[in-house]
Amino acid sequence: MARPRPSAPDSAPAGARRAWFTARKQVPTERSELAGQASAQAAREAAAEPEFPAPGDPKAAAFFDLDNTVMQGAAIFHLGRGLYKRKFFRKRELAKFAWQQAYFRLAGAENAGHMADARDSALSIVAGHRVAELMAIGEEIYDEYMAGRIWPGTRALAQAHLDAGQRVWLVTAAPVETATIIARRLGLTGALGTVAESVGGVYTGRLVGEPLHGPAKAAAVEALAAAEDLDLERCAAYSDSANDIPLLSLVGYPYAINPDRALRAHAREMGWRLRDYRTGRKAVRVGVPAAAGAGAVAGGAVAALAIQRRRR
Image (cartoon, rainbow, N blue to C red; front, side):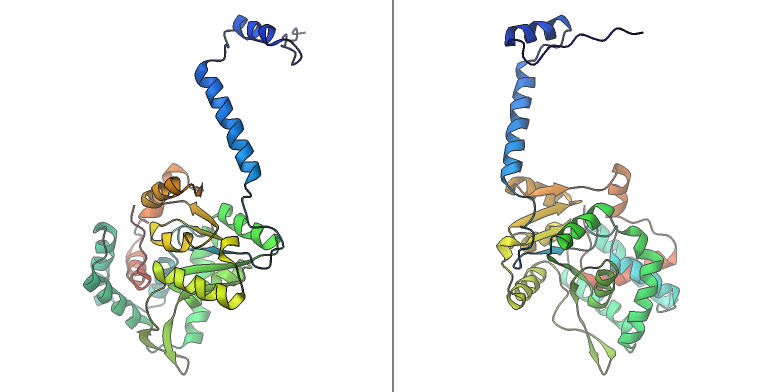
């Protein structure tokens, strides 16, 4: 039977404990003691500062970006794959769509002319189709391409807010119909998204206003908070993109989730909390999804509608 290793009793004098460590070549160094002090201080600060809005607070809510925050990749990309599969795209459009997608991924900056051209191309895909038709197809596409791409960690955060009695909304540049389907499937309160104009239940091929992107997201959340009597200082927001800094800056509990480089740097500067649910390999794939044939290229084309490509 192995003999038990001797231990230094907690009640031993400090000198005796240090001698015990010295005998085993485990002498606390100045750097290790500094690390211990810093860790203890961080623990005290974390205990003093709540991570989430107070449970049961009727004026508290949570707002979640969708793409790469709640779901791996872009919802509009997956929607595009499903629409191409259902022959919403024509082959002669693919070259133009592929060029647009390559531009958004590689240029690293938004050009107003290119963005307007891409938006108009994407809207033309749904023009003349009934809203009810796209909603039914969206339900199928969620099951085919999206359900298996929800980040479990972010889903758990959203559920924590729900369990605390708070309302939870998605806030995304994806079409509001798609966002609403995802919110309902996840048991969330609702969704804010880009609104495409429809007359008599048929899409016209025009937007109502502009895509829900960047400052527009912040404006939508402010309007919703006023209508729902929410106190934004008591609310939380989650996003992966520096484009959503206006939204994150509105609330008292901002979180950077799977952040891009710009948001990570800004979050550290501001002292915002960070969460990253990606492995190293997935972190690369999230930024630039692998194109899996023509369907993926078509998906990239529809992604132009949201004007919300993530650039890393």
